[in-house]
Length: 208
Image (cartoon, rainbow, N blue to C red; front, side, top):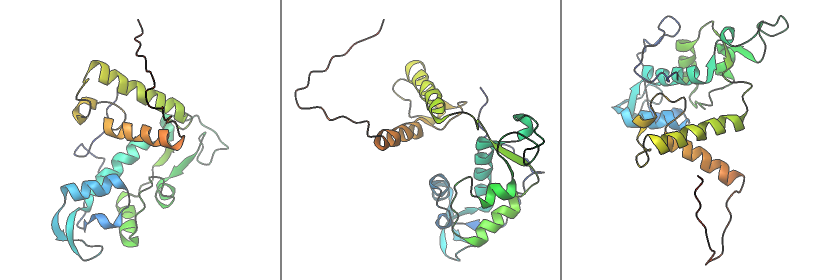
């Protein structure tokens, strides 16, 4: 199975400009993962976007996280779409350029500082076309595949230490903790919890 490119891997320097001089703190991006990474890896310094002394990282580190997100969620339609003369860019399905990807906030980053928003756009802007990976793949199929991977790992690879991120290396989804959080949110959303009265008899069965 194809592994996910992680921060520190090689990036396409011809496609993206990672030669940054700015430093940024976690107060200008509302994406939870990125803000956690900034706080985790940041060192005390001056943020170029609020002029305050906080934990900051070089902007290039944030760009790498964003590129990983782009590579995970999107792909070149030439690699997965049929040609269609009536399509917006000559392909089937929903295709878009980087301008639309960024200004429509398709990554849901919720950047609150306008200068930071423009700086990231200028560093990452390119002429590539994008489309969503697995655009015609339903959420239920995605969850079924995800849960199958989780069960396989817990049963046969790491029964009691599945929370170690290294165990899931090479898998196409996030670490086990994030998988369980996603499932928890859906359970609460659809009210799938049933309260049982005290002294209810439970039976344990094993399939052979």
